[in-house]
Image (cartoon, rainbow, N blue to C red):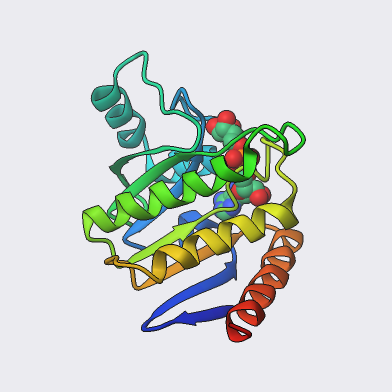
Length: 187
Ligand code: AR6
């Protein structure tokens, strides 16, 4: 399955490059220093152009810091979006250092910021599952459960889509979405 309905809203997964898919808000997997980097962060700044980094510098200063589990907003430059939400996921340290809570917090904060802006559609990468080493199966469960919970509450978001870059990450999210659907069907 690639979609779960939550009332009128939809939680979806798809394969692809997040910089190519239109959405009101695109979530980035950033670092606390908000200085850019590799992975999806590099792809977003490349595709979006220098305006995004310029805005980060201007709004949040040369010594900017975004705590792990939180997020900040900029415009989206040349990306097919209105906003980029730069979320900071945890570095995986074995799972006993609060990683699930911090990862959930990164997604929850992103959803709340997007809803505060009035966004109706949002796309996410699999935060923390690249350079930061978070195991994909566990990350997929946390990611989907957290965004589902947001979509079940008061929000402007109508559709939230995880854009998975690799076949492995797509398959992990597909399994986690199927589990989540079975869990909600069973009450
Ligand atoms: N579209 C969608 N997903 C992508 C794309 C893309 N274009 N490119 C990579 N991914 P990562 P993290 C996937 O490493 O683990 C950066 O240097 C990738 O396959 O981008 O949160 C930042 O500056 C993986 O599944 O982010 C930070 O320093 C997922 O995106 C640090 O890495 C996340 O991998 C953040 O590490």
